[in-house]
Amino acid sequence: MTAVDFAVFVDELAGAAGEIILPFFRTALSVRDKGGPGAFDPVTAADHAAETAMRALIRRQFPSHGIVGEELGTENPDAEYVWYLDPIDGTKSFISGMPAWGTLIALTRLGHPVFGMMDQPFTRERFSGDGAAAHYRGPAGKRDLRVRPCASLAEAIVFTTSPRLMNAADRLAFGRVEDAALLSRYGGDCYAYCMLAAGHVDLVIETGLKPHDVLALIPIITGAGGVITTWENGPPHAGGSLVAAGDKRVHAAALGLLSA
Image (cartoon, rainbow, N blue to C red):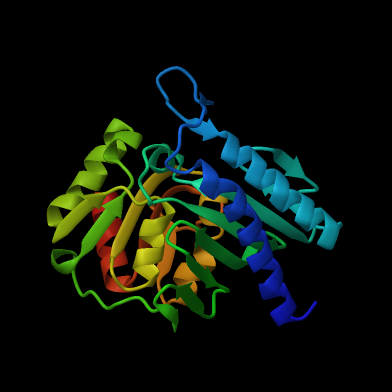
């Protein structure tokens, strides 16, 4: 399969998921809570149906590849190539009628993400990257993605989905960065990371992420010239507590405050 054919296939995956998901958005739909006591973690019928459709396409085109999905488990995880699927990243925004959600599709080779896409079918936007470059397609046309320079936290816009998702110690650590920043905003999920890649946001700080939450975003952020690590400045591939930044100077400053 050529690079062009591969891009067409990923578009096919995103299109199949979007066609299933969109009829559920801003409609009366059933929501099941898959979280434990005290942890609301909703999942919709759209999640399951979209992941089922994407898995079927992958099995047909690449039967030797592995698949890891948020909703439907793991198949052949030790394969050379493994797909990571999150049909609706930002489910709480989705069920609230807010457009800050998207479908995440990542392809890894030997555990390293080699391609990622975030598709937002409601706004008709797609963000993609391979670690060397990143691209946008949407109503405004096509363009390359590029992070913006930001010399200090005092000039930075920082996002997190919600400090309430953090434990008490992590919330205090995030608060130190928030107090030093120009502006902090809550919400966004995967969309905030794409706004970082597009040069509108300077920092995204999160905790409790899983691989399917982040693997699609890594090649988009790095392809746009940004950096993403754990709070300990380690590789972000396994998820956990992460910091994404458009400028290495802001990244270093945030890490310093998070570990203070």
